[in-house]
Length: 295
Image (cartoon, rainbow, N blue to C red):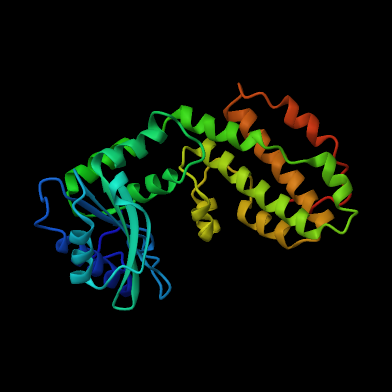
């Protein structure tokens, strides 16, 4: 966990100060239930000129919208956009402070716990709440540190059932190898690239499930960093994905075929009860025209 004094760069410290100012602007509303934390690149020492401030503010019950708008105004500025309805227990809003976009997720305690339960109890493999979980795990507290620590302790116990669900979800939409053998001979470059991109996302989901890591597509904005955090992974994962996405269709699908094979081997090794017969049979319908170099 980064500490503000030693691990954050100057841009990160500036964003942390803005986040703390916003958290403080919400004091006096319901201090007994207030929980606030900042996450994202600010706390990872990765903030640059393009980085926003990604933070959350939680109350037992959300106050009137006018109260929240006024707190943000005191901390920096007026809301510039809003997603969700506060009356439903949560919303995300944004405003500018010191020229930096601040994105704030407002939530009730009940709503936050329900979203976490989707992962830890319901074992949902494909939900934006994986991003919430990842953010909470690396967050720095601004208010309600004990409550945040409890949430982090819960989320650190990644359920094996969730990992299995992620693997099965990733396998549920198969790569259409039989159709691909024809597509590579058509004027279908756009379609081919779509298949490759979607397949890579699903393979990353499977790998994160095998590694006990929460996954959403947001994490791929720093794909090499994500790949480096996986210990059960094919060799040179990020480099191979980048290579296939730059290659012509036939060569790209050969790279993808090899990468999928490596991922399936890891599934068979670490989750041997998963039935891979149909996936393996489907792969045999693809005639590999160009084999990628050895890795």
